[in-house]
Image (tube, rainbow, N blue to C red; front, side, top):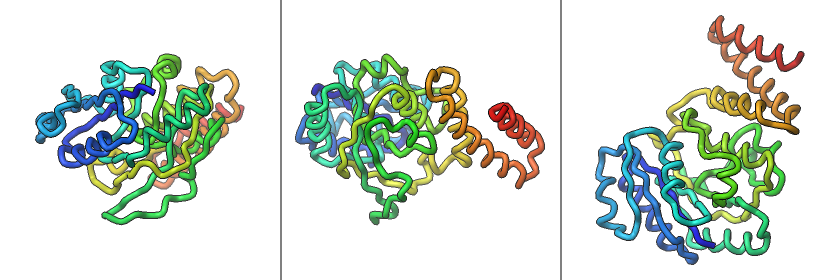
Length: 269
């Protein structure tokens, strides 16, 4: 398994070093490590002094989807493993993917379980983030439980379903996994092989409120291309429109109330 590692980063020089250390500590070594600097103004441009074997590319700040997509385009090998610069891999991560894909050669994507650290302490992961593998499209509809840092995906599959949607400020991973899961099984390595560090103010999940606003954009787009999942997508959209409608009513947002009422009516008709 020849792997290109793609690491998008923005002003995270110190934690980027931690992420890179975890890559170079892998028992199954990647073929290349690609860092996409999304317009950093800190010391990120100096990262090759510490990790001279990595490949470094700078782009004007354009968002995490743009950075990941550039990394994919710059990659030279058939498998892409993503790693967010504030996460880290455990040493056996790539080795465990290799074992799964050797056992199940038809799989074109897999992901692992994870450990969460908040304020330097491990926290219990909510049940809704329980990991499942196989035909998991329905499970993926409600929210995103697959972390980009936990995944490895074949380039052929990305060619089939498309890259990250650069128009989405957040939930770009949710959007991609839905497109993948609609027509593919997703393999699971049922081991905690990444550590996710949370709670920082610069994380996108902390920056934006009402994440369902972005999820419905993805679902609306998916509805236009789905041939067999319309009922599942419709039902999820009605649930999310209803939640957004309740929020709009609570804050007396008349225009939004009318929009969501109309969307719910159209889907039910």
